[in-house]
Length: 500
Image (cartoon, rainbow, N blue to C red; front, top):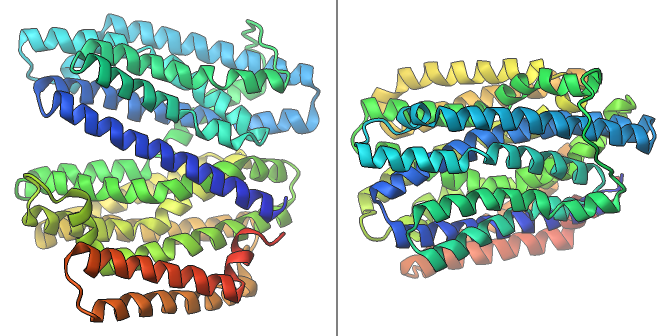
């Protein structure tokens, strides 16, 4: 592996994720414009949330279990055996997802009552109908994530990362054409997930995948995918479960609006950081799987060192900017209409503290994949459960005392402990992966950071007014200084392009 190729893939995937998230933001704007905060909006949001959170978590878990298995076939078996494995996996997942979807359609009234309690008869009929329309997304999401994993193993990272773009585009088109027809929107959302699978088929054909209807129950790798599914789901759930816990405590113990403030703050944090963290985990997972299968821990350590160089280069400046300008960021993004100055104060506090979850979030996304590549799925799930339990305890202690800051700060503290334990655990598995060279890199990176802070603070002393003068201009000039110093000191080249 060379860092220059991985760096190019990382930049490309980051751009695709950024475009997809931007389209998702446009989608939400048009949804709010056409449907607003009506009962129909509540129904669609809850049903879509079930598919989006639960089903995509299942799809990601299947993909995480599949990539090491497929890497084994590419390394040790011929194309015929590879195709048998993939056909068997797709057949069994399709059958399972279809059965679950059909059961969901049958029991849709009960599902709708659980996720949307208290609806009147007319609204309940709408909720049940929409639930039935969108339940087949489980099948399409599963197929889309399996095929995305296949493309990633073959290094087609851009195609696998842009599949959300047509998904968002068809929903935006539906909102433009049919306005507030909630049922059409449900059908189009389901179609969008099917499109995510279809757009990948030409690349699968190019790689000479031939699919047959084969159940292949005797294949140990397919069985292992099912066995690993629950542990992987738990291992990947730490952050989301902690955020849900935080909002549950806020709803019982804090003033009105606290839940929304925590939600806005955490969403902005995960939206920004996931662009880079998910992109990095995507482009490095296939190589981690290959080297782990070969027991080549020297190259595993090289990959991890490279990952942390890139993420430190991007995310440490992010933390500094959030620490200096968290209030201004929230003003720029949210403060308009009924989102008042008080809302900004509450949300900026949540955003600041949640941003310090970054170490744990990186470890969850990167180190989990190290364990998955070694087919050791229980360790991440146990550590994830420990993080969730610690967060629950800390929130109970500090929620009433420090309010929103106590809740979000508790989550940050739990994730810092999680990051330390996870790092020690991975080091025991693969050996030390940072060392003196990384310390030297951090020292040179600190020069760039000092330059960025100096320029930002210096521009701030001029006393310019408004968000442009007091925030956007200092940040832009500080970022330009950071990149310029990084370029002339060679830190930028070492981070993205140097062969390793």
